Image 1 (cartoon, rainbow, N blue to C red):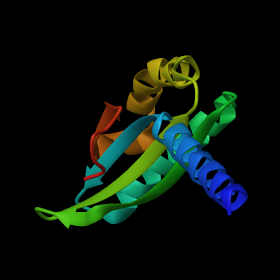
Image 2: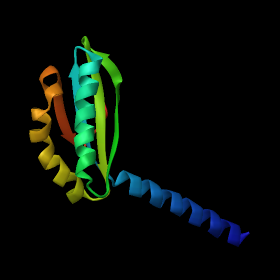
Image 3: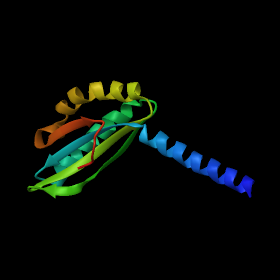
Length: 122
C-alpha cells in the first residue's frame, strides 16, 4: 500500500514538473489584422518563412492561425506564436524581426504588433 502511494506521488510530481516546464517557456505573439483575411495571413506567412530561415535553435513557431476572436470591428485577425525554452534565443530572433517585417511587401496592407510575454492571446 505504501509503495502505491509513493508511486502515485512520484507520478503527480512528474506531471507537476512537466507543467512547470511548459509554463516557464518564453513566448512572443505577433498579431496582424487587416480588412482582408488573405492580407493578414500572407503577412504572417512571410514572417514565419523568414523566421524559419533564421533557424534559431530552440525557437518554435506556432501558426499562423486565426486569433481566438478572428474578426473584430470589421478586421480579420491572425496570430503567430514564437516559443522557446531560452529567453536569449527568442530575443535574438525578436530583435531582428521588426526591421524585416516592416520591409515585407504584405506589411503595407496590415496593422501588426509584437507582444513579448503575452498575458492573453486575444
